[in-house]
Image (cartoon, rainbow, N blue to C red):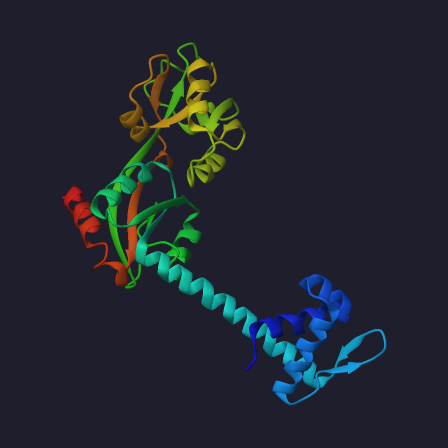
Length: 284
């Protein structure tokens, strides 16, 4: 019976063109590799190589065998990945979100409703989220738009609004509301893990220089001691409270307001029924 190891060895010889180089790559002795390939030829009942003094070359049988071997190896890897993903899905609820704020509530709720499951979360782009949902990488995703199609269960989750966070001495700190363009061109502090909001700030404030900070606690400390503007949101303010030494001003642009949607595959609807029932209850 053919073995995966033999097919990998065949591919290695095809790539390296010599037994010695292939054996070195595979961390095998040259005689051991030669015996394994000879066994493969006996099992197939054909020769695969034209053997010369210092090198081996695939004959037509060998070239066809390599094509099949590469296909089998790819399919074997795909099988292993899909089986692992299926096993993870039985014990894990993987949540993907377009932004960090929804995860602050969704992950604890899922942990409470499904204590026997491991809850994991990631922030990804919207197209990656949808593809991951279709492929089973995620069981729940959060998008800034409703996902359409009979294969999806989609429920409104909530909303988020952006605000400018200004030092009291800023020239615009007395405004009742501001537009993105009002601060475009200034230097601002920015927390880097904001998901799809990066696209919004690039579109709306193309001339602004953003100083990125990847650690949330370090970012908060920097904001509290800085004279530079930054962003916050109603969800952040609800969670962390109103800052003492900053002026919070609403952003008037429609792009500063997002409605989030929770989405799962229709086939996962029963498994996640308690979670979506809570979302429906919250929306009514």
